[in-house]
Length: 420
Image 1: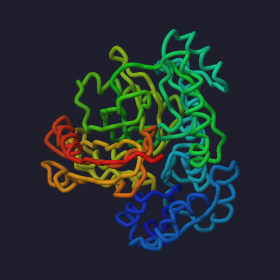
Image 2: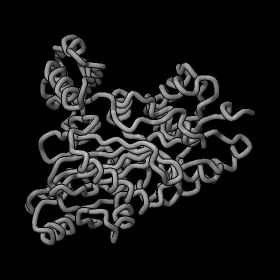
Image 3: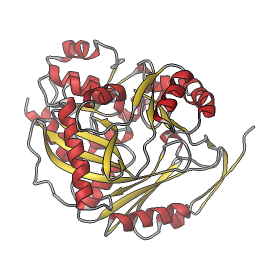
Image 4: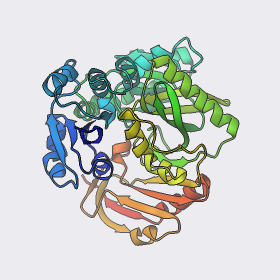
């Protein structure tokens, strides 16, 4: 069997990764590994049968402690070309499976540290990585104790979930009980549906400053490609991302500080090979760590990178995960700019959507994805899953692309009526 004929394993299905299979692996099989709940909720058997590439499905609870060993025992005579984490919760399993098959990967220890925000804080403590004050919390009293210690607001967040679910800025001690009920009690079902790993909560000192992320392609601990994305947030106490801009409109010195800080995080956790998405808040000109994911980012950031840098970074990532060098020299600077701007609406039932054709035809707009239509229910904006659409635009700079995306998004009017 030739190298390219071996299957690629993707742990955690998304439509985006199915598109990757169709584009980059159209002849050989792509094996998706996902949980029984995900298979039901995403209707995966039908989705994969409709793919324009051969796809198989393995159903298992991949977060269980021995899942990678069980998978390897069953499939060790059919070794894959690469193992890719498709979503956040798949990062540890993918790293362990890659290790068992002697394939490139993050490394089991690094994957565990990146998957869990508390483990990441511990791994980077004592280094030059700047962290907020962080504590594990199990009661509202624990949150109030940290607020008294730091003398200001804190962020209540789960250590082991994604997409800002269960996350809220708590500004006053009197708000703690309400925040705990909202984030921990009311959203327990949503957090449990995302992952079988029990939820653990953190409280952290609230950092004030502009937000960025660094995306990097790494091979054997050496960074091959890096990008800095600027982030915008929806107003309010829920830190939900409103927009992304590539490249970030910052000085070369600030970009260098962000990239150096990311390199230090990767060194501290022992990251080996893969893609990382490391989030930062700049406080008085210095990067402070929010979190770091050992996978490709969501939120259309990969698409923005490919638009702005004129590089198929997904293809290069797959090559590295197969143990090969990138297929071409990776660019050191972006060629132009790209940006995304997300849509929200008031909670209720959608009764009318106006302005979509105008937004689609707006200058610089690459795509408009609307996830609701008349009759859809819109939830209160509490996490990334509650956004209702996204506009992607490109222009000569990131700042110009951001303006294009934001202006087009403003043309879309989603009208709702309250649901009692």
